Image 1 (cartoon, rainbow, N blue to C red):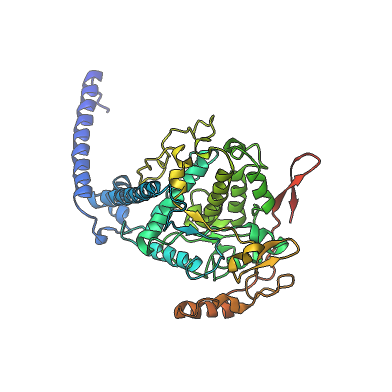
Image 2 (image 1 turned 45 degrees about the horizontal axis):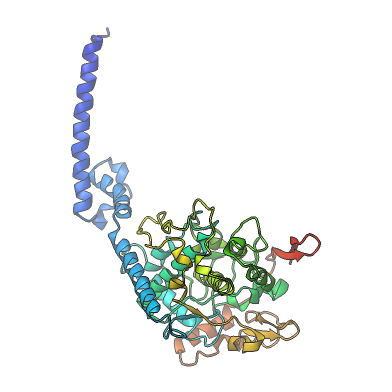
Length: 464
């Protein structure tokens, strides 16, 4: 027999049960919340069989703790705020000396391979390593990765005029973090990829991807060089992929324009500086190919330093560059605050998109001229002058047949490092055992390059 209650009585009973359950749940969650925010989770509380043992307070505490840290990470926020203050303090100081011919002590960015190696790339590499080993801001995330997490690849950072100013400020932020652990003079050297595309179909063998610089060009997690086996996110690459490097003709095309609106339009690919930038990300491949992970590769910053260098050359060639901010972009409006809001440990920088175009931030860095035959390829042993074309070209990594690129020897690896014994020994070991050509049988993927078609007066593509 089934006993049935009147409908009204059933409705009241359901209300009472619901009310009692709500009171119980509120009391339970309040205790859990207090447990999370008023104490630290002990390492012994984190059991792999937590939910197999039933849902209890410790299990809720384990489950909710990461969210609590993400939403309430004051350490990262305070650190970023300190970096913003540092940048603006330097901008104020530079503004006071703006009437001088050249402000003294302004950090200089040089091409990655420019001499002297010890105070250029080596200093950068060692600063990155120190930042990757620094856990002073968060115990569960190194300081390099905190900065790298800011870059998400969103269309608030890209696809418009704010791309240039956003990444300029982001690069300054990164260098401020490097300087916080390694001294004021350290900067991110710029990667002029026109030196590598000039190698033709041998560009994947550039010395840039050797253990002297960014590590060997394996199609996987890098295992050699300064940036292998560091704490945090692994670095993967697959160079010579579906993108391309930036040619001198491309640079000349961009510098031939007379307003910013002409170099930010995605539908004007011949002059679109951001479009050329995109190709390099795809050419490097691996984590560089995805916006959310690109900044975890230290070569990201060197690529963007070159993007910033060419933009600065462009700014100096046009009239009233600081006021020449393109309009008509809903996500890149001139007076909108730069948006770092996708970063879960924000604040945003107190800088508008238009302010990022100003001389205030441009004067915080100087650029050494790009390697050329006229400046002896920046006195680099890893570049040589092709007198026929009157351009500098990268040498190949040691152990690769030289053919048309004479003069590069394995001994170049240790050049200039005699007073840094441990580094020399490591690089000599690299010379003997690590620096190799791409493994036999590995297919070399062709990439599409752009060239100017005089018949259509547009860009056409070709395989190289």
